[in-house]
Image (cartoon, rainbow, N blue to C red):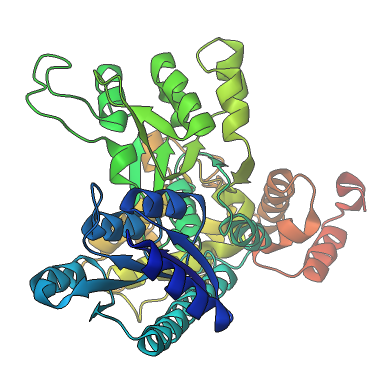
Length: 449
């Protein structure tokens, strides 16, 4: 059974088509004007629309455009007189799937409806299957297999199919935009645009017009109408990075968009509907901004429908070898493997700049190594902190193995908040080996064993 809309200004044709299609088991809505057809499509969805071309004041071409805008998968069959074949061709170019010339045979109409209702069903099934696969593979482009990474991928898979607003939280360099793209890719909007904007990178005076667009003459230099990023992202996802940097005036308009799904271009009193999913990100606690009155509390709770916390690299140190391999492949070093001592150094480091810092480090090592393999001496930590020795880089003053084993173990346990499994992972050893080392070094009491 399919849901059919029949639109024709001849009452008799609507009645006969409705009766014939209902006898075939379909659910049929009949209307007698183009405007009624557009109104019906706004209120409910149809598998197939049968529309006459000659209707006034809203004709069949307007019906095709309106149906395709609100339901792109709906199949449209045009009913037209023989002498209007040029119009029928134009209708096909506008999105109709078939045309039939009047006088029509009801058996032919029924056969066409059955055919295109099946096409619509197959299209939906194919989309649902792709969506299911996308959800299963959510975050597949995110490199890593650590528990924290897997937990994030799982949460992406849960929220992506919904239309929920997502607030992505994480330190600078953790991959918040990668996370936002993963949500978009696994969503029903994956075929629509993904538009990203950094609120901190655009001057306060320009951010409003960038997001919402403007009318000609709205301000000096506005020589023509211009759509904003909300309209550019229609049917897709708008990602607002560093949302905490948005000025209060923009925050007020964002709140209205989230509540009503409508915008006003700058200088335009007329409202425009927007069909867009909003994802936001911040690298600092918005609660602090609320406390100092620089961020609206009501907007915060509108954004906090579904938070996603992106873990810092120090909490997913087990992913470092995979990330290193990923970056080396990007630089064309597929066969180059880092020495184990270098990997251990990287895993013991705290990574204040997170994945971005790791990528920069690997690019620097790639440049230093030239045509040869990247070796331990090319992997330079702490280059942004001057040349003084750093505890993070374990600049040893002596070569006492036991002393430095203790330092390494203490550093790993401190960074893992006492979690011995995570500490062992950071050190590149098993939990059992860690326990053996603790016993051998007489650190049982110190570590609470």
